[in-house]
Length: 177
Image (cartoon, rainbow, N blue to C red; front, side, top):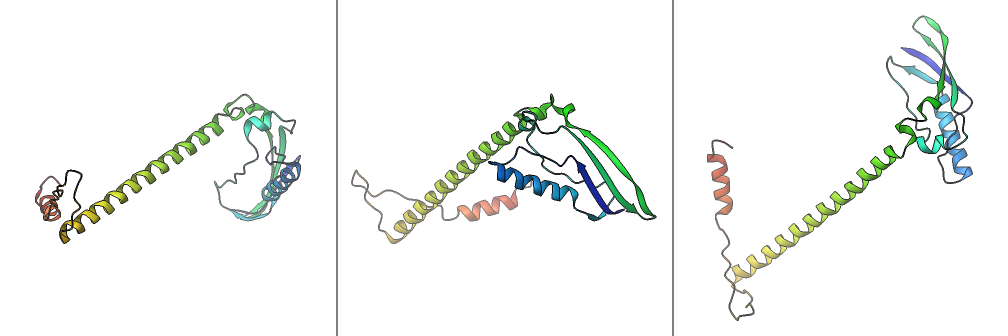
């Protein structure tokens, strides 16, 4: 179990995220504060993940590609020798991270999700309308006040009195169900 974990990043993390210079600076401050805050306890195998940038925007910028990360901590027997890592993001420049692929996938999934939601809403509305119509017709039938259709006849409505009980009985009697 690592204790008193302190991470330093050189140079400071930079990003292209943000709609303007001020917002970008705020995001950078938040990102650096999160990455460098002291962590009192970090169990083995745990990792911290931060969104630094979108690949294609990052690689199209002049932001640093190489970062030195130093991790200082203590373990069950005292201080641990600092660990230093050099992270060179340039090795990822020609990978899928440098394309719109990930963003395109997320946008596509979001659009499909919206389509599904709209379809479900439409189906729910149609079902609600159907139930309202059936309820209204059943009430009219029960009260004997059916409306006369265009031909001058009263429509025949034969509600299945025992449909629910038949479905209930057959579902329990069916050995396969």
